[in-house]
Amino acid sequence: MSVAAATSKGAATRETILDHAYAIACSAGLEGLSIGALAHAVGMSKSGVFAHFGSREDLQLAVLEDAAQRFVAHVFHPALRQPRGLARLRTIIEQWFDWVRHEDDGGCLFLAAVSEYDDRPGPQRDQLLQQDRQWRQALAHAVSLAIDAGELRADTDVEQLVFEIYALPLLVHHDAGLYGFDVAQARGLRAYERLIHTSAPH
Image 1 (tube, helix red, strand yellow):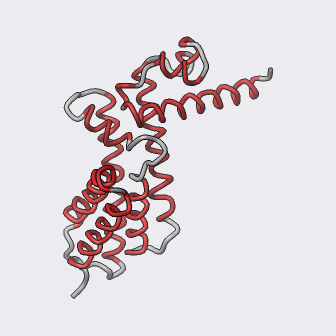
Image 2 (tube, helix red, strand yellow; image 1 turned 90 degrees about the vertical axis):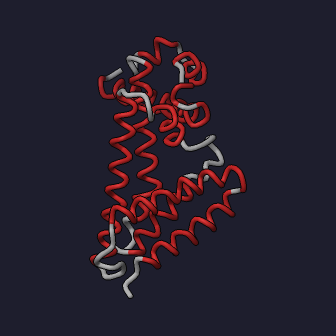
Image 3 (tube, one colour; image 1 turned 180 degrees about the vertical axis):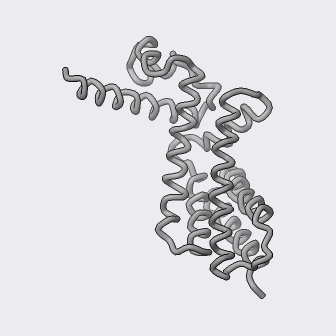
């Protein structure tokens, strides 16, 4: 086997392991992710999994990065196809609501991970913080573009509006499991429209 073919096969195997690890972590949390269970799910030996991830911690960090890429592709990439301003901001929130639907994979990995690591210093918490800050910055940028477009007031408190918008998907996720996604999504969209209305130019 050529070096290129071996590299391609190794990358494909790593991707398969990550797919299974992501699915397990969505249901059981990152702390519920064990090398043994993952090896069994993938049909590999523990040493085979360790060949791609040197430790359980490395695996957890890789799963967080993989989940972040999935989140950005689902929430932010579609929004970039919309015009700058409220159209882009609304697409972000709509896609974010859709992200928390999680009918097939067991739940939002990030919310579970925050509960697991919010009071536990370490690389997992550091990575979660970095990812969260990047998403808030992206949301703040979208709000700022809407201000520049004249669709939100010039004196809008960007950080406060981002805080309030960010809270909506969290509550939609909470209510979706208890009362059903459609009801939670509808309430979330009404709450979003109310927020935007309060910041609209007079």
